[in-house]
Amino acid sequence: MTSSLTEQLLPATERALLHRIAVAQSDGRAPSLVAGVAREGRLVWTGARSGGAGASAGADTQYRIGSITKTFTAVLVMRLRDEGLLDLNDPLEKYLPGSGVGEVTIAQLLAHSAGLSAESPAPWWERTPASLRPELADVLGDRTRMHPVGRRFHYSNPGYTLLGSLVEAVRGASWADVLRREILEPLGLERTSVQPRAPHADGWAVHPWADVLLPEPCEDLGLMAPAGQLWSTVADLCRFAVFLAKGDDRVLDASSVREMRTPSVPAEAGALGSVYGLGTQILGQDGRTLVGHTGSLPGFVAGLWVSVEDAVAAVVLANATSGPSAGVVTAELVRIVAEAEPRIPEPWRPLPEVDRDLLALTGPWYWGTQSFGLRLLPDRVLELQPLSATGRGARFTVEPDGTWTGRNGYYAGETLRVVRRYDGSVRHLDVGSFVFTREPYEPDAGVPGGVDEDGWRGLRP
Image (cartoon, rainbow, N blue to C red; front, top):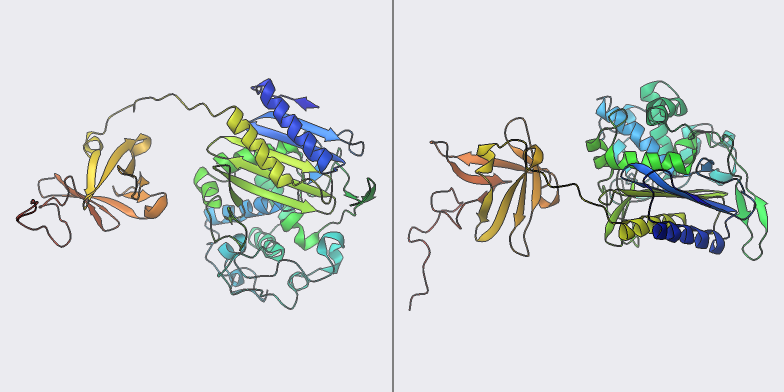
């Protein structure tokens, strides 16, 4: 069963998507599996496969999404930062005194680098009542430190419990209420909720050696809810994926979601191609960067990935404790669409007006003897790129004081300044103390160490 909603994909692409989820449902022995793809900000395809235990499964059917919930919690924390109510470098103790781990920072909790345990103390929190863990101390247990703070990535569910409690402490309202008011309602995620709402899938365990089912318990996670409680649908999560790619000023602007998508700490050993941002997983695969999250709870697996460069997002949800690898299948759906129907670039257009001072800066520049080209892009952005096969390039955005700040690569965060002579002419560019001149080692352009007064020469016998 498939349906195309807007700007229909090519029939061959739709069949490839359907084939992939059919194989995933069959080989993974999932009672049901649903999937969706968004392109250029719109849901363009949905598909579902069912073996009878989820016959009504579709784009509007709720599944439990597990740790994709963490990304929602991270958005709430980033909103607090953007409102000036906290700083990501603040210690947790400032807002949750007495937790026992108050020296860790908010950023470290977001990035799973606080060194906290991966799970709460036994029994397994995902299959037991929240009443067993009524306080944060019950979630953290006696052994809270697994690793030195800030030294490595170590995934921590209790860490996101602390972030949920942080949101409640700063907002003075429950995590669920803040989530609904600040994310779900503004983005129109009407079928995303803390508790399941019909139609929803039931969670199943599939016997590893026989084609039989066992119902999984559905527990309210209580304090652990910010780490994995939510139920959602393919349609809602595709909309959320678009938000992670573009931002939405009603929730978080584009610069803040870009910050969430930026790697924060090195990957855990063995996790090749995968790093973590601020509440997002970042995966390098098939030559593209995917951002999103995967999730699982007893009875359910979920995956959400978006390729910002391709403007393609995909979601896969299934109601089986193990079986289909939702994250892998989701990434393959993105690849199928991106490769079968590459993004059509926007038409080139000339700038609406010319800033002649900036235009005069364009062209070749030299750092020592290495050649670079400086281009002027829309919105007064400057792009400095090496003209040879090696070298450090970056884009720079303009600041109110007339300088530019690097946004990527080696020069990210560094300042580009135009240094002028007394007559107003450009002497050189200063990029993080590196001097770029119009000619290689231009004599009067302020090259550190000076330039030999005899200038360039041939080899003398």
